[in-house]
Structures are given as C-alpha cells and as structure tokens.
Image (tube, rainbow, N blue to C red; front, side, top):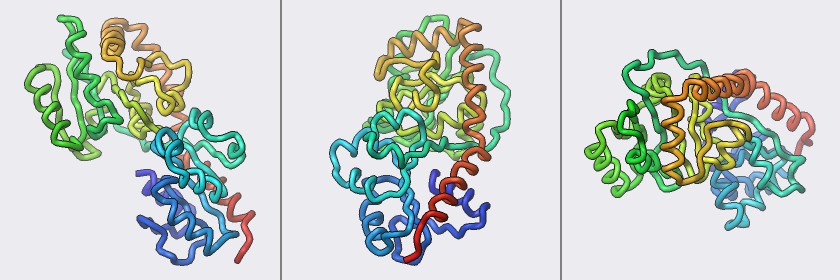
Length: 303
C-alpha cells in the first residue's frame, strides 16, 4: 500500500515510477526502497552501479523494532541511503543519532472516507488486520469475559488468519461469544465501510512501524484504543487518552467500558482524533514526498 501510494503521488508530479520486487538493474535517477532488510541486496547493487545517485529508504516496523537488532544488513542499508523515511515521530528514538540528519517523518495519508450511520442499539468495535502473532489479534477476545454483563458492545474482527491455529481460535471465539464475529479477509472497501460504522477501533499490536489502519481511523473520525507501543504513540501522540499496556486484556476491557459508558471520555477521544486529521491528508503527504525527492535530485551528481 505504501509503494502504490507513493507511486501515485510521484506520477501526479510527473515522474515515471515502476514498482518492482527488487531493483531490475534498469536505469533510474533515484531509487526508493521499502524495508531495509529485505531490500538490502537491491540497495547495495544500486549504489554500486550508481554511487552518486540518490536513494530513499522507507523504514518499516520490522526494520525498526525487530531486524535492526538482529541483522547488520539494516544498518548497512541505512548507511548507503541518502535519506531515511519513517512513518511516525517515535521512530526517531530507536534510530542512532548519527543518522538523524537523514531522517524525514512522512505520515501515511488516507483519502476522505464517506461517513456511515453508526448503530444506536449497540456500541460497535472493529479490529482490523491479518491474524498474526505481532498483532496480538485475540487480545480483544481475552477481554470479553471482563466486560460488564449489561454491555452493548459488539465486535467485528476483519483480517485473514495467517495460520491454521489462528483460524481455529477465531472460529471458536465466534461460536463462544455472541457479541464477537470474525469475518476473515474482506475487500478494502468493506473494511473502510465497517470502520466508518464503528464507534471504536482497537489495535492491540505488539509491534508496528506506523499502522495505516490507524491513519484510516483518524480520517474516518473513529477513536482508537491502542496498545502503548512506539508505532502507535508516534501516530496518536504521547498525550492520547486511549492507550492500554501491551497484552493487557483487563486494561483493554476497562477502556472499552469507559468509552461505552462515559460520554465525556468518548468525546475527548473524538476531539483528539480530529486534531490529527491534518497530518493524514493526501496533500500533506504528497507535498512532503515532493520536497524530499526534489531536494535529493537537485543535490545529486550525474554519473
């Protein structure tokens, strides 16, 4: 999604921008690489062939919060890159200070999402993302026994199970809890419609570089309850009221109850999300990308 979005913006600005899984070896004035570890071979090859041409490296969550500590290729890619792009401000904390001069924060943008009528007879929660361990996708399921018996909360869980065990747990939870439904993989259009109809979105990830679905929730005016990790804090801000400790289903249940029953708290979450909307507007992201690319191309030498 990031690659396609950048491609669209750069084409609007008049650039020719093919997307490939690895650098094809074809002539290019500038290379944009997504993922320091997986793109390391392409980064190395491009810089070997064109040492004076600029290279932008977009760092992902797995780069920052997993691979940087375990794979020297991440550091090598960062050394070779002329510019490093991160998707949220907290990423700067983990990048070595000697490379901060290369870093630009560019928030992921989302086009306008049509408003949808929210159900009045229930408090609808959505959880969006493929079911894999890094997402801690069943934190919401573990929270259900801790909800009050008179709660009107219903949960729509969207995302493909990435293993047979994950699918088994999701199906079992759907049978066990009347308020919980796992819908599996759905279209992006259906996902956005479900999001817009929700009162709250929950993201319980253990690791994120800056989840696009958080930007979508901000655009859709849907408050977020988020695990307190760097990737979420960098998007929502340090003072955001909707955080819970990673993996804590009891804390999540408490926040869900408060959001459902405390109108003032819910309104504060809505107001905080609204204030973030200017950061995720397409024009803001396009302008940031244009400034970065223009600066690098202007300062590069031909070879």
